[in-house]
Image (cartoon, rainbow, N blue to C red; front, side, top):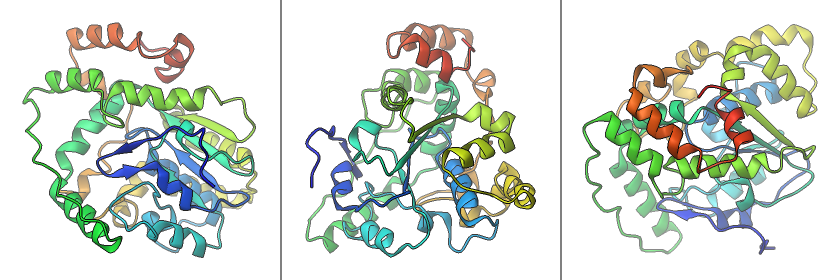
Length: 303
């Protein structure tokens, strides 16, 4: 049944109405994150907690599919999910107000300082092969009996990262700008007191990975034997994920250089990229896009 109270989110290669085809189960985990806030890392942590081994049975992209993604035929992800017998953990970049709500399901999100999210986004876009995505999008449409046009040519971005940052700060595009980034987090922030909503922060994951994983396991009601923790925590580190990146990175075949997908995995990297004028502009604009409590949390008190 379509939930008419859900907000519609549609873009060039995503459509949240595809969630209407997903039959949710008791215990499902929906990872609802804005792009470049630690989505793949969160998927990996969930996989480790669920399977309780660093030797995952399949690549992460197969274990944790993305229903909204239009590069797959419509029936593909619902079919994959229907066949899964483990506890399911499902990826999406749709904000919480665009998802089906079910009290049996856990909703998990991660926030990150928007300035760091931009630095990661800038690398991400430079590494993305839009032509490859377009070809998959058109081919998936044919399977569904839909004739789609290839994506139009995209003009090159400004050469200066400072200009690119200001464009991102003010971009009206869903998923691809700071207004959408903060709006997504706000949909989770507003629901954070629900017992089935878990909101984590990228910086805290970096500062205390084991403590964060233990807290998440408790929130998801997953029992992990004490002897398992060292192996699971090590497998969730940036270095371990980088060593196994062929089984970790999503959407293989659309990156110009797959080794750049897991780029640095740090926080505070914006400090070496943005200048004082950029930061001043950011402060002025960010104050108009979210409430003070959310901003204090997402920036971890760093102005």
